[in-house]
Length: 350
Image 1 (cartoon, helix red, strand yellow):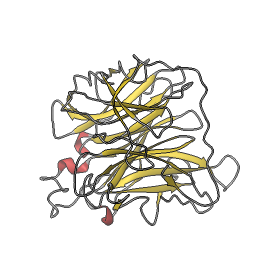
Image 2 (spheres, rainbow, N blue to C red):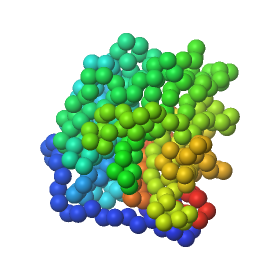
Image 3 (cartoon, helix red, strand yellow):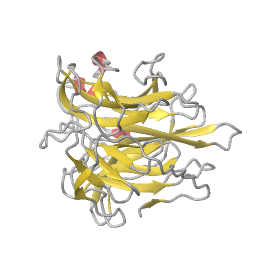
Image 4 (tube, one colour):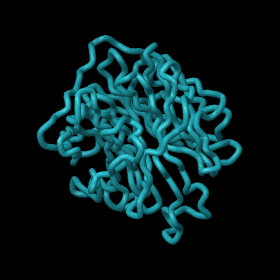
């Protein structure tokens, strides 16, 4: 098992109960993974993963960006141990992404509400302007399928370039927040990831509170958590958050924001984190960025390069992310591992 090793404090993983949770139908796998002891959890393309373990289940369910070749908006994979993953057949978790979009569904992620409802967040192209992606939401009573989309996007700052990479965060208070990235580079005259003379436009990571009753009503204004710096090239993105008890005082929490730097599939794409001991919104300033990346470059004898697009969950010391085999830009394979956190040093290391 790939361990993300830190000193001292090891977070506790709380095992779920043995009762079942609703699936649309039995999941039948056609691609079994290799163990992440020796390589990727899935050999096939499974980009921008999000995952959830529903209340009362022992099944991890992961979602990825669209698979155009198979005609699937949101592919699904499952695991009972977080090591051996299987790609499901016959399941598209989001058959209908909504009339507001022309398609290209990306970066889906799911949260479960107190009443058992599942809410999926995803980004997709606007039907009225295919150069802009916005964030949609859809609801279901089953975790892996039958999601019904809202008639309009949930978050759509079109004048700033749109919004991508949504990731829900359920805080210990019961509040639900939605992390996302402003896609300023969509307003560029070219692609900064392939035209290096073009400057990257603003791609800040934002947070928006949503109603804990339905998950689909925004509450108050959005806040910026982190902006890119010069080392990030065209930008940052793919946020995901967890939190652990802080040593500052009783009932204080250290919030850990995972994010990616650079362009997916490029050699300098890397996985980073930032922290806040001043609440989920980071107080009066942005989160404090780590001094070095969590993962970068190539590892595992070149089988994992350009790591990024990580996904974590509250109270589970587990993480999914993408990596490419050396010398390729596809597939963006799924990798899985465990992590622990040194709260005293506010350090996370691979």
